[in-house]
Length: 465
Image 1 (tube, helix red, strand yellow):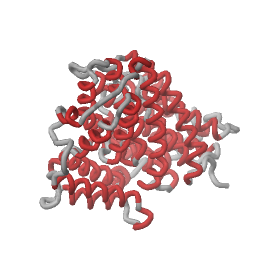
Image 2 (tube, rainbow, N blue to C red):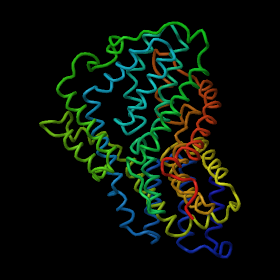
Image 3 (tube, rainbow, N blue to C red):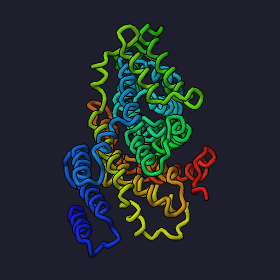
């Protein structure tokens, strides 16, 4: 990979070999190529590489310093910061444990347990804006289920695989579900001027998250267990869940829990009703964060809540957004896409290729945010060349990138549940068997939504003529 990157850099540095390319575009492609190679082939921290790339583009004059630093003041960055403060307040009260205990205690069969757990995990996307945070939040619930089903080993292994699978695929439900979503929104805005808000993302992403998560749940169930494992009743009590939680999961809500539940419900409601009141989601989130950390009504101290914010991710997003601006404004992305044989490619074939590449990209780039930083600017530039709506193409790429289940190291939630002391869990072979089914299933689901469902929700496949 490094050899290929150096070869490409040599071509970029020789003006006579690539005459149609401007100096700014050459520098941008050079920096972009080296950054991508470093993300793939070196152990250097992703954020450090992104900051170095952003600095190089600024020092060489491709972008201004106000572009590099201004990305940190973007509304989506503030939305994510405030969402983490709200998530810290929710985690402090134990509301998530109550909700999980309520749902899983209603299961009477293995299949019911699987789909109720899936529904609960999808809902957590609204409360915790990070897949790794959601995985940690759900771990006590899984451990309780594992103890209750200790005599049914394959069912426990299936649940260990179910939790990270659903957490990763359901992140697409909300704009704050993953940092990659915010990168996609920023790249789209810089390249096309179109801003996808919280409500529009929810309208497009939640149905996909629900469908893909429940399809994945069936895939996990059928590839991990046998018919005999799925037979027989299941009975999970709240008391069993309570043994693995340091917060009460039954009984009346405490005053702190009631305040936090009311605050979270109000914030989500205001997010979803943005077209009615016109208050930006970031402002709503900031109000919620201030209330959540207030001495009188809050449930968490602001300093403690800010300690949960992934500042490294925010810096990564800012730097990669600056890289996206450079790719678009320098003409590098358009020049690169013009060299691809896209003339005459049908829209469905283009989207199919985008989804396929995004689905397997985790084998090369493990960071989901890095994948979106590399793929989305190129996808947006290429989409216009074949008459495809850049919004549809970018969303399809980002949604497909949510599949990262092939190896234990492919995603943090997969890594977390792959090694649990004294608890049966999955092996790399289990992951490969599931991936053989889930990869095409997820890709086809995303493609179906991009071609058939999203056009009904206001995102056409083709650009208007």
